[in-house]
Amino acid sequence: MQYPTQRLEASTGKLPAITTIVSLCVAVLSIASAAILIKLSEQEINPYATAFNRFWITTAILAAWNGAGGLYQRWQQDEYTVVSSSRFTLPSNVVAVGQLGLVGLFLAADLMLWAWSLTQTSVANATLLANLTPVFSCLGGWLFLRKRFDRRFVMGMVVAIAAIFLIGFDDCQIALGKFAGDGAALVAALSFSIYLAILEKIQTKLNTSTVLFWSSASATIVSLPVVLLTGGHLFPSTPQGWLAVILLAVICQILGQGMLVHSLNQLSAEFVALFLLLEPILAGVGAWILFSEQLSVLNLIAFAIALIGIYLSISSPSAMRQNESPIYLGELTVELAPATVNSTTENEHALKIASHR
Image (cartoon, rainbow, N blue to C red; front, side, top):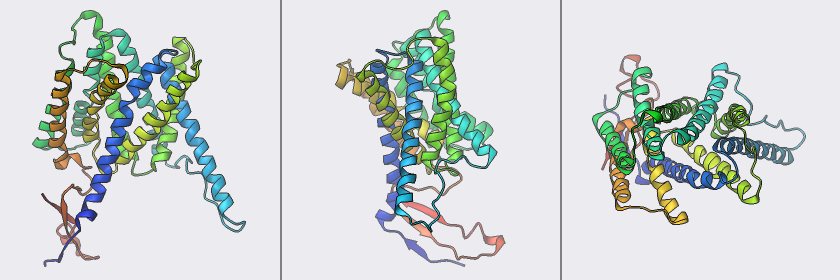
């Protein structure tokens, strides 16, 4: 039996995908500013202390925001109304609690290992190897999560990664003494891919602010011993230093990571990892604007190539979460099924979405 087809208006079909892509763009722009802010903060404290301050300030801001929201809610309600509990209450599910802790652990590991790799190998080596996150994400999804990626997505990934390698290949160095730093950069890339994979799973269970709060709190606990063991100042000593780490918390962690979590509502962790390859390019543009660092024609060419690769990937069904119906930027046609169907024909009458480009 055929069911009527309802054509959605362009605005209705475009809105979810456009807002998701905008969220991801905001996330990349925010996270890309981290390189500049870290450079400013490291004039006073080491990279480990920078990460620690980023995490604890994020936790404090979100806790204050949650408390202020609770007070406002109580002020709005009368004495007979039951006020809801804290939005940041830990879930009762032990698995979800463990996932929140692991999110903070792997994010802290990524930042700490990346910082240490820069002291043990060249910046070019560390950058190139740390940008292999999409490869680890795809391999992990394929081996452990039984995900499948079509040819268009894989082609886009190869093109985008090639663009990043094009930037730093000339400066890349191969030396026996750099293997420890190179290995740390690789493990940092692996840690970030695991971080994204866990985020993709837990994002469907908890809201964004809860994920950010508890992951930042656990990252604070993980990073503090590292800072104490490495020595140096724990906190900045000047207003400029404090401003840098506060902006790291607000822009890179709360805004950047928050938009990243939101985008995983519709996009796959593998595509998000691929899209984040724009981060070093945008960071280079920011350094060119603020610090007059050289930006070559090769950088601009690599930027264009990376955009081509990302376009190929985003136009692939593999860019979407594989347990959900894909949402495209084009006009949508939706075939609606009746509310109740026979179990033998349930799959035939499922909601179908097709793109009209």
